[in-house]
Image (cartoon, rainbow, N blue to C red):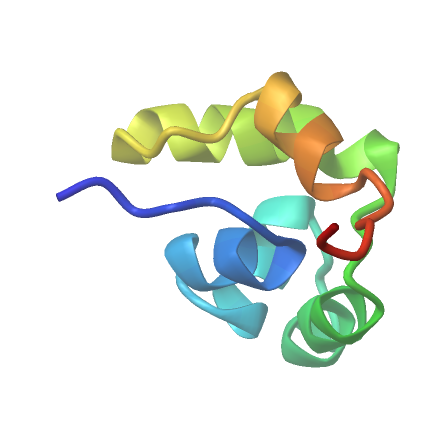
Length: 79
């Protein structure tokens, strides 16, 4: 069953959690804290997107630039 990628926290969880995510982004120090910060803000700076897409592809996860754009779109209230 495919994993739904509906939010930044979903992406971080799918890639192994905050510490693994921080390592993917290339942080050498405070990987967990940096990953947790992005999860809490629900925002991943674009500069890290290529590394995230590459890591996701290597793991067979459905995360690409389109998914990253979608999870960063403002959410609207249900009508």
